Length: 217
Image (cartoon, rainbow, N blue to C red; front, side, top):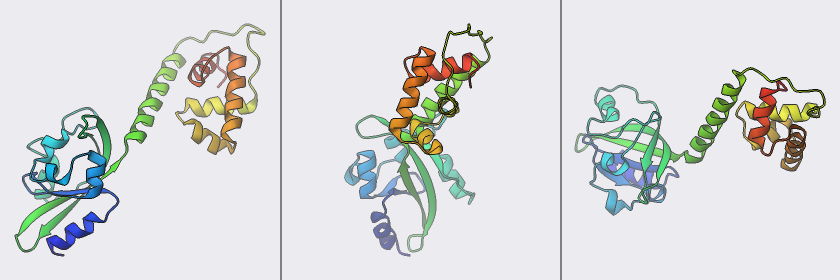
C-alpha cells in the first residue's frame, strides 16, 4: 500500500488516527483526531507528538517524551500492546485515550511510520476512579471493629435491597446493578430509597458503608 492510499484509509476511520515518523514527528492527522484532541491538522502536522500530548501513564508518570518507549519498541521490532494514556487536549483539559499502534514500512521512501489509533475512554476512567474510591472507603470500614446494632435500631433490609447494596459495594454502577437484577431504574431508586430510610442514611454510598459496618452485606 502506498502512503497516499494509507492516509486516505485512515481519514475514513471512526477512531482518531495519526502517524508519526521515527523521530516522533506527526506526519498525518485525520478528522477524528481533530475532533477528539481539538487540534486542527495544520496545527498538529510537523510537530512532535510528545510536545502536543504531554502524555501520562496510569501511574501519573510521563510517557510522551523524547526517548519514546513506543518508538524504541518499534525500532527493535518488538510487539506493542495497546495502552491507556492521559493526554492534553487543545483546551488544556486532560482526557484519557486507549491507543493501538500499527507499524507501517513506507516502500518508496524506506521510512517507518507509526500509526496511532486512539479512542476516548475518559468516561470509563472516571467510573473506574469512582469505583476505586468506593472500594477503598468500604475496605477501610470493613477492617474496623463492627458496632453491633441495638435491637430495633434499624428495620431489616429486604432480600432485594441487600442484593442492591452488595452489588454497589462491589463497585458496580446503578445501571449495572439494574441490569444484573433485571429491574428498571425506577425500581432500583425505590429500593435505594427504602434502604436509606431503614439505615438512616442519605445516599447510596452512605447506605453501602453503613450496611458493611453493620454486617448486613
